[in-house]
Image (cartoon, rainbow, N blue to C red; front, side, top):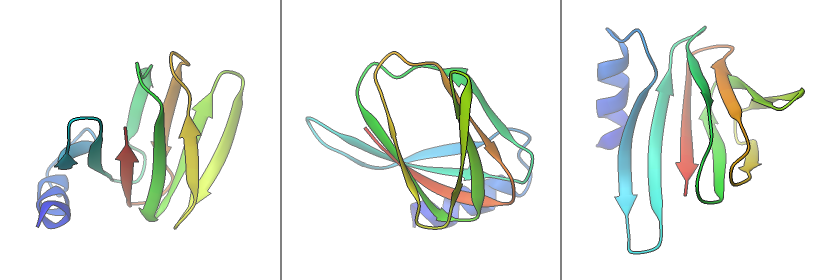
Length: 97
């Protein structure tokens, strides 16, 4: 019921909500919830990752470029590259690391 927990916490949140859905020896799957306008500030990942939009729409920024990701779109996130995510509408994403 992790996605439901994220949605419930998101109601009163001022920042994106993230909860681990599954963890293994070599991977982690995180559910991320955003309200419209929320921003996951610039950061880097130490391991390759993929962002998958389950519901809603987000703007993924990397370097000088950006791409709008809608429901069921996915984006590879390279190691050590500064990036950010902004919710264009209420959104649920899955981050696979």
